[in-house]
Image (cartoon, rainbow, N blue to C red; front, side, top):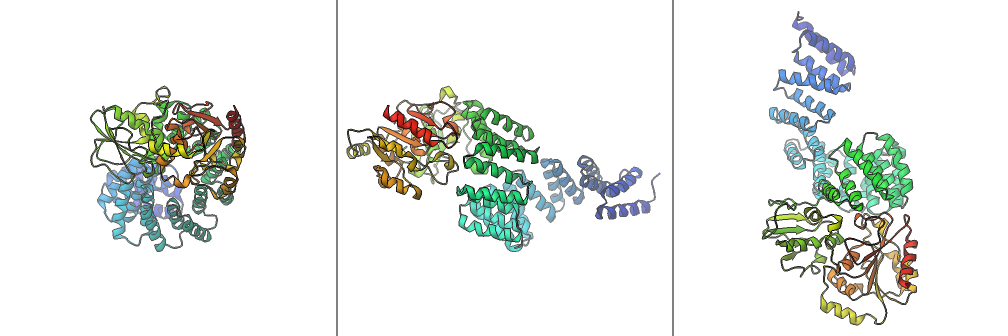
Length: 619
């Protein structure tokens, strides 16, 4: 028999008081007693659902909250709490639907809209998050969290200036928040405004010494500047402040790889695996360490473990793609590489109303827009697929970086070349350049390669260099370093002084090194290289000089790609852990018939590479 209303109401009041005092189990028990007598007691179902969720019995909590919502479907509070319970279960889509119900019932529900926007960010629905936050900010312009979440969404869609402005607005409203300061510093670092970022990081650390987000921002800033010893010290500071910091352990392992210590990095990554037993990022991190040791089959095992925990993890697929491609497993590798489009820093696909071309539609008489992504070397290497598209009957518009425009100017009669800041007036299909191997179904045995290259240098400019270069001796071009800000620069570049044994030969040595670092200037003065790089304004100028040479010796840079694409003999100095395109163990390249690979036999061993090149020059 149901107890009198007054009795259940007093019991509920007591249960509510217990929950507020932190007596979660007692509050839940009292609510269950009420429900036993009155299974449709809305307040008791609602409160017991909250109590169960707080106690970690989330499935039970969700069940009771669902019952409460069925009893009062127009109560926004119960839908809001149900959304939070769904989030604890990892049921983001259900949580989003519950938040949408709340906002349909109460458009002014500030906390629900804020939580909804945060969830949308987590789900990668950034445009919707920005819309929700704009609505909220218009009504609550003093809400710092709304500006902060807006900054997070803007950061993810690469609107960095706007993200910084949003973080700055949050900081102005709540100036003592170290998190807002650290986020400002992160946005500045991503804009490469490093000098402005550091004092903001320092200010955040003054407010909260050892603050993880600020130290992580400092680490990322220092790594971006290739200041690895300092960044390693910052990781040690972070781990000392918080020994359980997964990100701190991840960064320490990565930086040790950058410092040429992959074995030690692998040992260190074991610590993160103990901390994050069920975190997919721990397996990705360990896989990265194994890949740095060329233990790619083992690395794949760890990437697959990460994907078992989170099947759509973009970084796991992305890292996995490089291992697969380096092993020659192209069919899987190109598919996995498309996950770069789910990562903010490697996003390639652009949004156009016209469809993407994935190789399914015939190209004959189609207007195909192909656009560059990533570096100059990538555009040169994968530009070969533009020829395939043209030969398949497409009229191609090819967007390239401006310094490459003249190189591809007369590429093919069916190809129109535009600069990086231009857009075609009309096209039918589009494709980012590094998706073309997938679209053309490239396998190891079907790589399109031309024995004599597929790029031509301007004939009159080649003749000019042939007249200027000394005759009667072998003429060798040299490139010893790439861009200092490239993420792999630590691995692929070397000091010019290390190459001094090569200059004992009677050959003519020609510098193709456009940007010479300050540390290399003394060695350049004594090396006796012919240096006309001040006359090279773009890659077409460099191509003409290369075409007049007999051989190019280079580290893995865009100039090496250019020389190989011209069909010029290239001796490539390859680090122990190579880029995927150079694969493993082989001395040739299926991409470029004119390339010969000289590999490090152990991490950092350029001396061995140089000794083998010296012997080859003498032979």
